[in-house]
Amino acid sequence: MLRVYHRWFSPSVDRDMELLVFGHGGARVLVFPTRCGRFYDFENFGLVESCRAAIEDGRIQLWCVDSFDGQSVYARWLPPADRMPAHARFERYVLDEVIPLSAERNPGGGLWTMGCSLGAWHAVNLAARHPQRFRRVIALSGRYDLTRCFGRYRDLFDGWYDDTIYFNLPSHYLPRLDSPDLIADLRHLRIDLACGKTDVIASNNHELADCLRSKGADLAFHQWDGEAHKADAWRNMVSAYV
Image 1 (cartoon, helix red, strand yellow):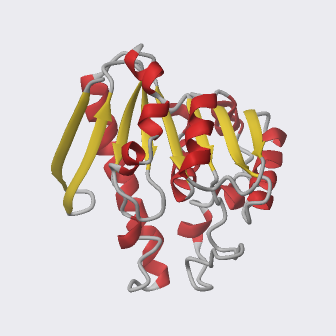
Image 2 (cartoon, rainbow, N blue to C red; image 1 turned 60 degrees about the vertical axis):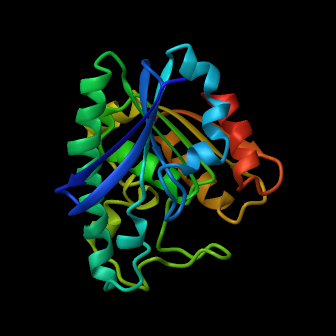
């Protein structure tokens, strides 16, 4: 399996950013780590191994990006009003730097997003905000409303709310989406949404699944026994959906 490491100074986030690429061709899959995770976690958790056959066959190529959560939505040291604008800088890094590099190295592959836990929010949000650019989403154990408290998960904005938050929370903007063009683009996405039946964020997944169905999205909603919010469950999920 081809494994390539990249690092460069990103003008979007004003710091060095690292990533790992696995595979030589196929669909380019942007892989987002868990909350404040690292670009090598997908490999260390055994999830790259779960994709081995598809990678070696040239069906997919993983682009495992690093996290910026500690400088954005999980930056308790930032005023709440500044956290989502900081995330917007990370989105620019992905759109303006990572994706062009992936297209240069692999011009024949379409774009997917994939992530676990907070990485699933990144995966769904990026694709839903720019559906014309993507073909598929695989989102595992995600929370799609970062303002609501679910068990151990708190409101990441401490009660603050504005348009930058609204337009980055799929649970908020997708139910009100009424643009025929954007809905048509959304319907071209193939979406696999998965979570554990007893996960504290299961209700949020049900709500998002219902919303996507109402928009006519090509959705498969998978419910796993137990909480299923850890690496061993994600390894099985990745094997099932990739």
